[in-house]
Image (cartoon, rainbow, N blue to C red; front, side, top):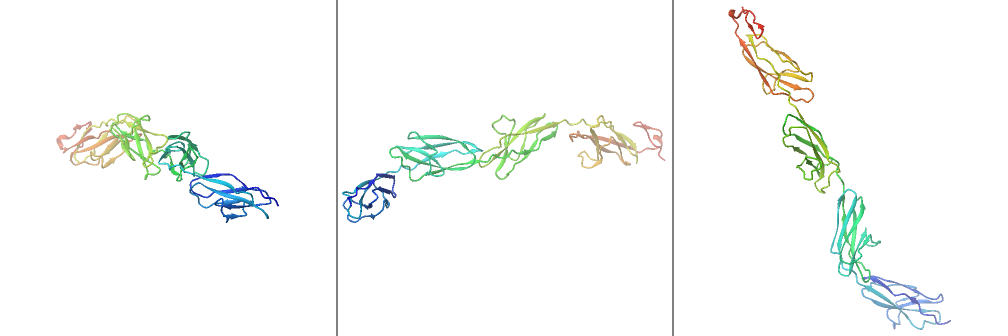
Length: 365
């Protein structure tokens, strides 16, 4: 057998401490022996084309020879294992969060002689973005629709080695709240109006109130809001805002506010009657959309008769007062209360035939 030629082995390198795989090529009639030094007599590994080293933290050399049944190669091939230094760890890196899907902004500052590299999920994949030069780097991720982790590292400019500890940054995509549910409001006559609303999640959400749809600064925050004094119909706006993320609903909800006119007070004449007689109180109602309500007191606590233009009192024994209001059936607004005095006369024979308020007084026996 002839002396085999030495094996062919390519120099190799890695970033930072770790193991290296060396592969030798040789003729088919020989095998490979591996050595730590050129002059070692005891091989590190015998009969294998591949050597997987132990942990290496500095650049070094390995040696290999070929051997067949009769001879060994005239010399040992030398292979260099180069351990390249890692890039320093990233210190400053940030990524923006947003409300709803869309673009997010990434920003980081590299170490000297390094460039910023940004990865999805881990630093083992192809970089999503690589800074063209060292220093500060900004990059816009054009579209995200869910919260996602990113990893950022330094990448050396001389050997392309990454930093050992990728910095994890999270781009939060916050949900956009649903618009609030607000009931249109109204009141009778000028004054302040109380607006009330509901949101989907009262624990984390509330309502911002605006005077118009183009106002940036809210005029109130909370589940309810009392307006300034209003004299005419107007529209306010409300939007839901998340108290933690500050995300707001996509549209402002218009809130119509109606200021209804107060009906004019009814006109009812006072009455004079005889002792133990009934008084007939009459109001001329000029609209089918209005009712006349009659009360025992001016605070409208005791309703005597509703929705009638004429009120016949029970027998009255002494002078008293009744009260009436006009109520709009469409708006529910009521007029100011009017007072209707009823005077009771102790009718004697001298009053026989006397007419009081166009009514013939009865003859008292």
